[in-house]
Amino acid sequence: MTASIVYTGNLRCDARHLQSGTTIETDAPTDNRGKGEKFSPTDLLCVSLGTCILTTMAIKSVELMVDLTGAIANVTKHMLSDPRRVGKIEVVLNLPSNGNEGDRKVLEKTGNNCPVMKSIHPDIEAAITYNWV
Image 1 (tube, rainbow, N blue to C red):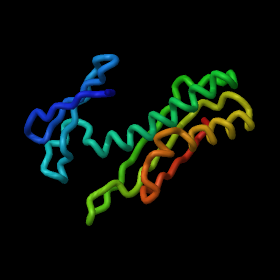
Image 2: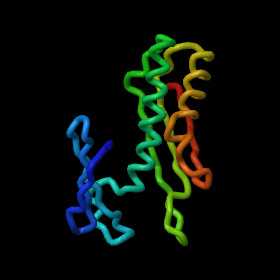
Image 3: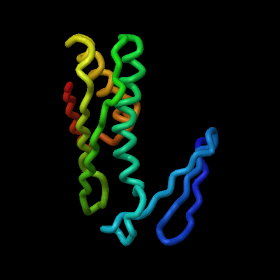
Image 4: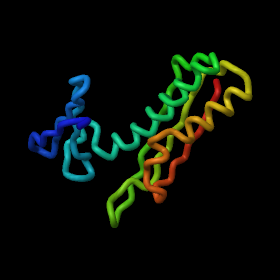
């Protein structure tokens, strides 16, 4: 088992990662009867994509000896209705311009093939932008 999740009322859940004991609280978004005071479950889906891209790129960057410290992923979620679901996830990555062009292509390919990218439904549009600054 990976996590234990408790519904705490008022459209909120507490999720505990069993291996580390860390917790995440979720809240329904304001456009769906919640207070929007925490990440929503759909926010976490989108954040998972951004963190997975950065993490898999960082793993590959060690092999390439390219330092990605300070890289930033800005994530935007676009919801659809009928049925209510995530329709598009935009991830804009601002990465330090370390390494050469070949390294950057390898890192972008790695990011585009991260496990979360391969796990999201094909009807969800993933728009990924890599800025090497």
